[in-house]
Structures are given as structure tokens and as C-alpha cells.
Length: 392
Image 1 (cartoon, rainbow, N blue to C red):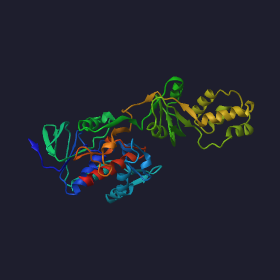
Image 2: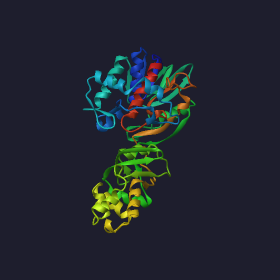
Image 3: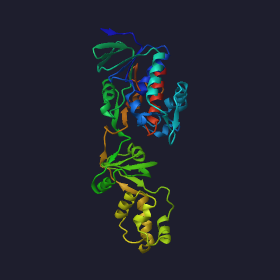
Image 4: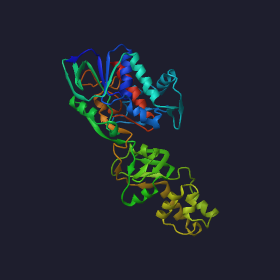
């Protein structure tokens, strides 16, 4: 028997789904929130090392990737980092800014999940977890959802089930299958904020596993100044994860190993320390193992004093634009988020509702809007969930 006591059914009790359900519920809508996991907000709980990097104070639409770079503007303008901070403050959750505008809970991410559940409870949201969605159909103005052995119906349905990143937590492409079922287009999903793998001539850099250093990493037209980390499979660290969202197979990633070095510093080192080797000069500004590896690749043996200025200038140029050719990524298993997703071309930027299916909404990571590392994707979840919640 189908229960038809709801105004809206929200599929997915992650950040966007919880926000959407709470906002709609507090507006007097009867909301059913469903999730296959045993508990809500699993990604929230593991984010930021368990402290939840819940927003970024530098949020602007330009720090999001989408086939339509303008789509996110409306939602982000109507629910800002300040709005979420005010909510966090109202619950007495202590927080701090770490770096680059990234805000974290002082203690546990559990406080954010508890806050969102409390907000949902204030709206009378019916939260049910721990069963699979076995079917979704639409007809006679109602969406019918089979959840475990129960059936529910409502005139509105919100897709908030995220993308396939971190499949060990139960993530999947369910949102895309459902969107296609209703005739919506999907921008090819791919791993984002993900480590890159190295092969070929770059494979020797894997021997530096564990070495990290501040760099500027560039992929396409995007450049990020943060730490890079060498791993047993290739490259990681914040700078690389950021660049990975802009990287495409077959393209290079360029690294400036000395972004703060003044032009001519190596020639100056020759003047001041003519008997030093290149490895020793690099060791003064880079981790020793990395300095040794780069010096070997630059093939300038002997003392700096024996090197022509033009060769030292050439080494400087290489160090400023060291080119790696990744052969892939570590995939959805290690990706923090998914790029691509339900095409924004079929959605209203004001309400997140599908243009071709009245009452069908999509929010959060399921949509083709992907933020930078550092709280941007949570802010999109809050903002898109709020937009849909206000429209329901």
C-alpha cells in the first residue's frame, strides 16, 4: 500500500538533502527524507579529518566548475557562508579558520550532523534510513518511491544522493540513473579533487613517497599555490587535488617548485657559493630527497662555479615549469567529490527544479557543479538544498 501523506520526498540524507528537508519542513511542508545508509550525513562525519570543513568564507561562483559557469550564482547568492555560520553559531558549535578561508569545527563533525537533524526535527521531517530505494515512478502528478518494503508517494521529489566518489561509503551513480529515467541529461561524471598517478619517465618520482613541499600546480588555465605530496602512486596534496579537477587525460600538469624564488637566484647562488653543488643549493629551499632527485634530472654535475650562467638560468626555468604527464587518477575510490553530473541545462538555477518534469528537483553533488577543495562543496550543498527547500 502506498502512503501519500507527504508534500515532498527527499532521496539522500547528506548535506544537501538534510538542508533541503529542514528548510522545506520549517516552511510547513510534510517531508519524507530517505537514505539507504544506516545513519545520515556519513560524508559530513568523515570530512575534514572528522572536524567537517563546513564552508569557505571566500566562496564565489568562479571557484566552481560546471558546463554552465553561471548556474551556481543564484543559489550561492541567496544562501551564503555567513548564513551557515550564523546557524552554526546559534547552536553554539565552536569553529576556527584553518587556512585560505576554510572553516572547521573545533571538535567533531558530529555536531554539524546533530544540528541538521535538529533543524529537520523542527520542521517535522520524517527521517528513515537503512533500506534501499527499489523503484521510483511518476504518474498522475505523484512520484512513487519504493523504499525497502514500503511505498511512499508525493507530488515533489528531490534527488540528493550525491555522486559516485568514495564508493566504500555506499556512494553510487544512482542520481544519474534516476535523472536519465526522467529524461534529464547527465554531464559525464569523473573523479575530482583526486590524486594523480604517474608512469613512464615520471615513475622515479614515486620513490619520493611521503615528501611534501609548497608549490604552484597548474592544469589548464587553473593554478593553485599549496602543498604537493609525492605518493607511491604519483602526486597528491592540496595543490594537486585542486589542479586535478581541471586536468584532462593526455594533458600535462606543470609545477613551480620554487614559487617564491626571485629570478636569477641560482646564478646568485653561484656567485655566493661557487663550490656548492646544485643539489646542495636546492637542499636549502626544498626537502633533501626532492632536491637530490631534481638535481639528478637537471644534469648539472659538479660545482655551481663550473656552470655557465645560461645553464643555471635554464635550470631555474625548468624548476619553475616542471612538467609531469599523469597517466590517470586514483579514481572515485580516492576522489573527494565528483565532477560532472545532472546537467544544469535542464534545471532552474532559482529553484533547482527540472524544467521538463514538474516537481522533480536535484541538489548538491548530484548536479554538475563542483567546488574547489576547502569547504566549497559543502557550501554548494547548503545553498542548493536551501534553494530547493524554499521552492518546495
